[in-house]
Length: 184
Length: 184
DNA sequence: ATCTCCATGTAACGAGTTACATGATTAT
DNA sequence: ATAATCATGTAACTCGTTACATGGAGAT
Image 1: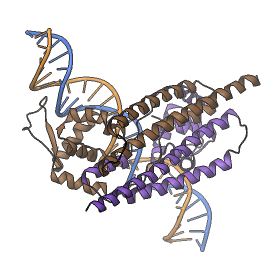
Image 2 (image 1 turned 90 degrees about the horizontal axis):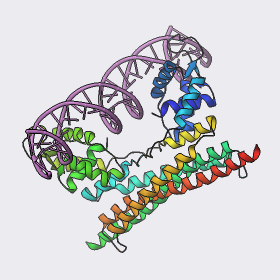
Image 3 (image 1 turned 90 degrees about the vertical axis):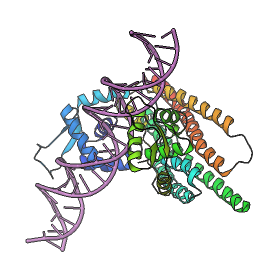
Image 4 (image 1 turned 180 degrees about the vertical axis):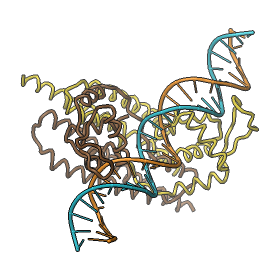
């Protein structure tokens, strides 16, 4: 149940319409909490029912741009939610499942897949580094900036980790493939 | 759509009943693909319909232990699935959302939450290190063992990353809190 | 006029979660 | 006998995904 609070947060930062929200998600919040525009519309409807956000123009049906903003009640709800406590979820990684299955049915072409992942992670890492260079110049910063930097840093560290892991995996798999060939 | 294939994998490694599967998930596969026993029962039913797994005793209703095993068709399906290609999903982390919201409604007690997460990740890291010491002694190993080690290694690296990140976050937050106090 | 975007929305489904129900087995 | 536990299962719900439908605005 985090999407509603992600939306209130985004609307507190700046009021905007559903589609703009979807686009902003793609650029920032979406890096650690993805959502499609359908999810966003559905959730905005619920948030409005709850009285946590409000849309400006009278609801004249489809095709009309509706600009939402967060209400005081939304801010209160957000404050309550920030104080909640949840255990971190265990990771969920399909590639690890595939590797485990590969041991049983392989050898297969998993190396290609790992290579593909490696490239995706490298691209994300490069993107995050750009953002860091642009938005977080070295030197002291306010508490707010430091927290935002921490969040970005988690993304940087994760992508770097996956780049490192993928390279290692490729190395291990190629050497063990060579050994298998020797054994024949 | 990964759970069915996780189940086929587990049943190929060793046939067992639904509840045993649930327990084995908690111990191994569950570290990177969690599932509850309800999910597992539902999925086993579907897998049996599909003809990918079979249960031994005649189906005499509730309370009767049913031991499942993977069928050749299941193995084929697994082989097909291992060859599939999917982009890695972007991370999804509620704590990052909370931090982003905290900037707007804070300062709050997020540090306590980060501390809690830190302890969870330290515990998982210790567990994975135990498993590594027990199951992966140093020295050459077969391709299978190396792949299994790679999977465990991803878990180790991730938990170590979160420990590192949490410690850093606590340091940053405590120093910026001190500065805020100075400013008053 | 009609075409192409922009913007909002519906519908249907699959996956995951939570709470609970029921039959079998074992221990006391 | 009955209570605890093992084992399987139902039901109801939320969240996320995919495909598609509809209305409005500007361009040619």
